[in-house]
Image (tube, rainbow, N blue to C red; front, top):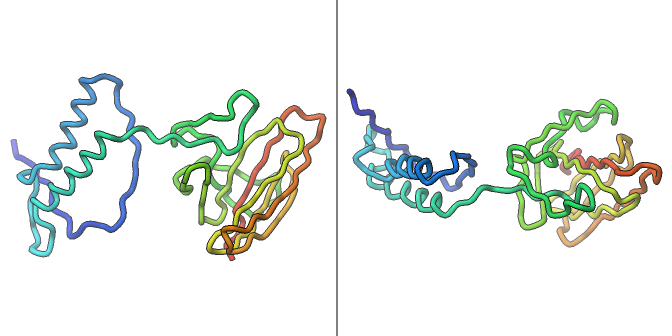
Amino acid sequence: MVRRLFLTPPNLPGQTQCRSLEIPSSQAWLGIFNQALLTLAQAYNYEQVNETDLSPETVAAYCYQVYEAWLESTCVKIPTPFWDDVTDTDDEFPTEIQPWYGYVTDPDLPAGELTFVERAAIWTFTGLLAVSATPAAAIAFNTTAPSFVLAMRGDSFGEVIRVLLDGEDAATVTTSGDPDELVEIPLFGDPDLTTHDVLVILKELL
């Protein structure tokens, strides 16, 4: 049997990327995955083909740092934007099944033709603040409140925000580039409806 070695990469990127991984819930299976990752932290599992590539020792040392972070990691949970109903204001779902954050295929389509696609990966979450710089990024949620105010905070750039309430256009506003400036959008739903669907779309970056 031929032993396969990992090839050392040319450099260490300045940024990292997070991926979630669900594994069987037992100590035996956790041990298997821990051991598999630990093989990446052993220099003899690498081959340096080009002189300009990182050395096996450098790659192994870096992978050990990744391994240590893995041991301390927990599954990422995405918090609900606002609320769904009065009983689940603190809901949070795993990234891959959350229903709130995503994008629309075309932010300029009429309200009845918009398609919302769930995809949290284009959003960044800092505390209770969700941020995306991707045009067509969207947040969809449901509320029991018949009337309320959406507050849009500015960013380093201005944005054109389109808001739909119960499938109809309710407002289009422009934020400033000042993070301390809020644009408030009052929304009034049909009082005969029990809940109200809200879709907030980042239509354009200015």
